[in-house]
Image (cartoon, rainbow, N blue to C red; front, side):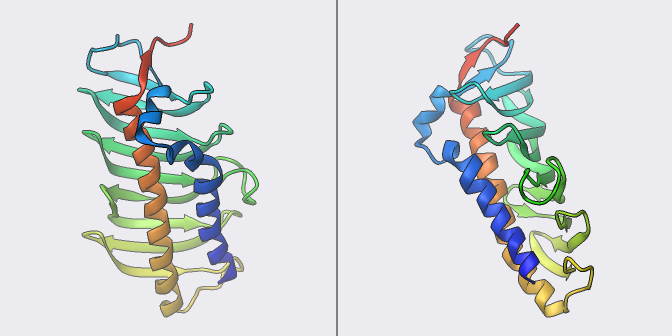
Length: 201
């Protein structure tokens, strides 16, 4: 159970220590972020785009269709590690999502900690999480955004009692959705407030 609680702590530490310092600023701060695109300023964004922080580090990359975030988008931590891949449809989070462990969490950088499907602000269908060593940590099944069933395993591979698995699934679901929501907010804020620049040659 302590291992499962550690995962919750890891999610919050990623969000607070690395990603959120850029995200919690006032909305007008996003005008300092850059949208790297060959599409000239004033025209509707289309195609592949990169978002850059004021210091020039990569914040996100993905595509636009008709001026809206579309398809898979990657968001990066300030140290360059990928934090999340989330799918957008018409500017809203709607599709596959993967959250990644970061170096120092006991897993190689780029190792998935969660995979599932998000529809706006809720999970839909199966959500699977893994311990840093790659062993399955939980399976959660959602229907219409509501948790229907949950299974969980300790780091030792032993299955948790159903009540304990459900309790932890509810806690992790809230933390996971909060993290995803913050990442989506950052990408959407940069998309609407960032300064457009031509790609570096």
